[in-house]
Amino acid sequence: MIRLSDVSRTFDGRAGRVEALRGIDLDVAEGEFVAVLGRSGCGKSTLLRMIAGLLPATAGQITVAGTPVTRPRRDIAMLFQRPALLPWRTVLDNVLLPVEIFGWKRSKYRERARDLLELAGLGGFEKRLPHELSGGMQQRVSLCRSLIGAPRVMLMDEPFSALDALTREELSGELQRVHMTSGATVVFVTHSIDEAVLLADRVVVLSPRPGRLRAVVEVDIPRPRSLGRNSHLADVASVSAELHELLMERDAPAGPAPGPDTRRTPVGAGAAGR
Ligand SMILES: Nc1ncnc2c1ncn2[C@@H]1O[C@H](COP(=O)(O)OP(=O)(O)OP(=O)(O)O)[C@@H](O)[C@H]1O
Ligand SMILES: [Mg+2]
Image (cartoon, rainbow, N blue to C red; front, side, top):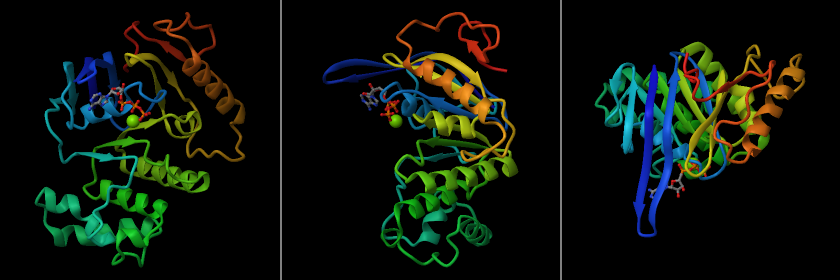
C-alpha cells in the first residue's frame, strides 16, 4: 500500500545542511498498522510529511496504492500532534472541513460527521467552539475530522502525546477499533515504546542523525490489546525490552546480528517489507 524506496531528505538552512533521513526502504501492507519509533529529531515527522505529500523527498520514491505521491491526496488523512482546529468554526464544521476542501457533497457527510462525534464521545458538542473543549476533546475532534472521508491511509504524528495517560489509552483503544473495522493502513509516529507495542503490527525503529532505518520489529500479540492487566504481559515485556535496547543502541548501523529467538528483522537483508 505504501512503498518507500531509498528515500532521503536533506534541508538546506541558514546554519548549513541537515541530513534528516537517509536511504529509507519500507513497505507497508494494506490494512497494516506500522509504528515509527525514534528519538526526538531522528526524522519521524519528516518521514510522515513526505508520505502525506506535504514535503517532497530529495531522493528516492514514495508510492501509495501504486501511484507516486506528489501532493496531499483525499485518500490519505493526516493527524498532527496538536489538534489544529479552526478556532472560529464549530466542532461539526471542523469535522466537515475536508468535505469543503475536496468539494464533496456536504449533505452526504453531515450524518457521518455526527456519527463519528457520537462514537468519539462528543455527542451534544457539535455546536461548540474548539476553545470550549479540553485538549483531549479537541484531539478527538481532529481524529473525527481525519476519519470523515474514510481514508485508506492514516498518517498520525504523535497524535496523543499532549494528553494525559488515561485519555491517551482511551483514544488508543478507539483508534484500534477504527483500524480493525475500517481496514485502513496506518502509519503512527511515536517516541513511546508502550504506545508502539499497544498499537502496531510492526515497529520501525529509526536511528538519529541522519535518520536511518535501524530495525523492524514484529509485534505478534492478539488484538484488541490494552496496557492494563492482560494475558500477554510476558510478550509485551519482551518486545518492549527489545525496542528499548534498539532505541538505546549507539550508531552501529543495523545493530548486532539477531539472536535465534529475536523478532528483529535485520535491515539491509531486504526484509523490511513483506
Ligand atoms: N523545515 C526544516 N528546515 C530545516 N531543518 C529541518 C526542517 N524540518 C526538520 N528539520 C530537521 O530534520 C531533522 C528531523 O526533524 P523531524 O521533525 O522530522 O524529527 P522528529 O523525529 O519528528 O522529532 P520529534 O520527535 O522531536 O518530533 C531535525 O534535525 C530537524 O532539525
Ligand atoms: Mg516530530
